[in-house]
Length: 443
Image (cartoon, rainbow, N blue to C red; front, side, top):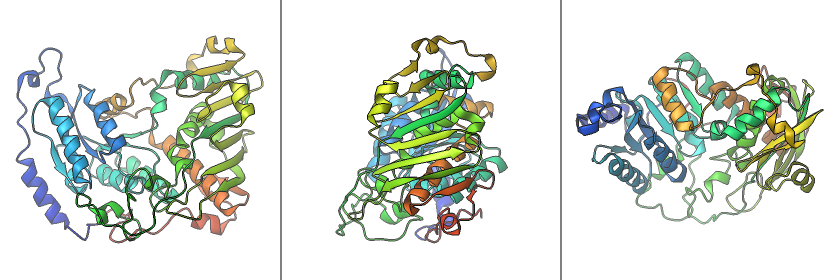
């Protein structure tokens, strides 16, 4: 990771060492491990980078893990990091949580075991790379990379440093999603031939007139590797940046990765062969937002599997057939039945499939709390339920669909090479430049 122009690496480290001197000795009551508590010396120490709406939720999830202790919060918005620290300190009954504007001040600390990353999408991989290269485990909110090249760099770093990586596809820690996938893998629906997946789309609009930068926002640091552009009203809010291609792929990945990840979990190797992708998409041409507000992608795999990936609302015939939710879901169809799952329920056709016995060979890794699974994985130095390989495979699926739709042409994805076949223009979209001094390269 290269230094930021506003602060040298030496400056970051100097500030970090000063803050380290203020870290607690941690010896109060439960600190000795009494009354069922875990002594601080045995806890996984965590830091949170990006503590806005989603990040604040994740830190509350981490606070539920008695095996962990959050010691630092980092965000480029002062009010957010202060609110995070207040929540953390209130929970622990002290004032020990330290706050930072720059992520380097977090990743350079020697006393942090894991980092929970919920920054904006265009920062996910850079923040995670810095943490992994510093020897820390990472929980990375979805989606993963803004480009395929970022996904690949993240995977390479995780494997090189033997790091613990948990992807924020928390549906894998929900029993009904696990059950649905085990039924598919166990053959309850017969030979799997089609998967239907759908998710909420992006929105259009967004103010384009320049506006003053809020006093509490480090806007240059928020932009980071993205192009330098004038600030516009609420550009940095979830209301808009989620749907601006400089910062995100849009909900085709930001939300779409959830049903796609479950499709991958259930299909296994059948979604790891080369595939052909084609379809249609709608992209706004006015306002700030420019990611897909509608999409229909059909992916035909060499394994014989077909995946139909749509923006919500799902077609009426899907909803009626699978007794499904309008806004999101994953449905697996085989030659002897089907199973559909969303965050409210699992449905089966015929209904008795839900009671089918699952062979031990089809059982999946069990997790009932996504953050606790990450904390335990860091302690035990094992792979968590949403590991790096599936994270990259699912993310690349979303990239392949988005590129095919933007180009309005049929493309063939080589899953081994992780490139399109005979499509230079499409392959050029698998990477994009970063604003200096940011880079995927390791110093």
